Image (cartoon, rainbow, N blue to C red; front, top):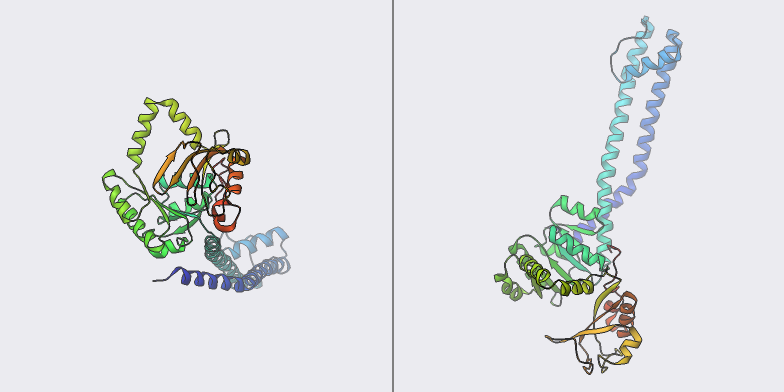
Length: 375
């Protein structure tokens, strides 16, 4: 079985062969077209000189002769004209056939090698990614996951095994790896060892479970989120290595019930979670040892004055302190969730991490608002 590295080498060799063949292809096309034009000119001139025909009649006779249409002679031919026509058929039809085959072969080669070059460029773009997300499956759920990640300015790669769906993802502007996401080689090609998170959104629980196990084995600190079809098997996914598990059907049911019983609360939550609403959004950051927020209280004027954001939660270990009291002190390793405008969230990230230690999070664009960036 070929590894991604081997496939990349083969693609590079194919691209090199195409570059070497381009001058030869161009020369063959020029020769074929020149031969065809010379044959047409010679045939037209020959009928005009030998038979004394007009230019239009001579050109017409040459055309139907070379294309073997067989409409019949324009005028009766004398013996010399018949011999000339036989020679024109032998030479002209050969030239026309050579020109047609050369053009057809060129189109096929350019399309074939063009696909290879495009694939090679995509491999190069994926290899350049760091701290990106991998979306396994581009069905109804996976497509919305990709849209949300892209709308929040997160780099992502789509892994899709169905060629027609993979092409749809490419048309939508995403980096795509064609292949079965349950295979380790495909995940490695998508950059799983450099990725920040994986979302497994395939239609079957078996495939999603395979992806969870494979991703956890390939990278221990990878954040893995998986779709499940039944709540009863969520614990199996968690034991297999998933960090978060979601059942779309139960989630939809709870959402519909909340919208029916507490519509105003859901409106507020939509406002907080939807970065399209007035440019507001949420952001999280892990506090490192050199962060100026270490030892500060969540209600400290420093945070509000420096960033303008509002701290709405602090996660320490597995404990989430929502709406923390103003005297809650921020410690190293805490995850702080804040709410604000895009500019405020950007300032918060900049202030929270002014050292290289956590630069991958600090330099990312906050969750607001969207411009549907794909990369």
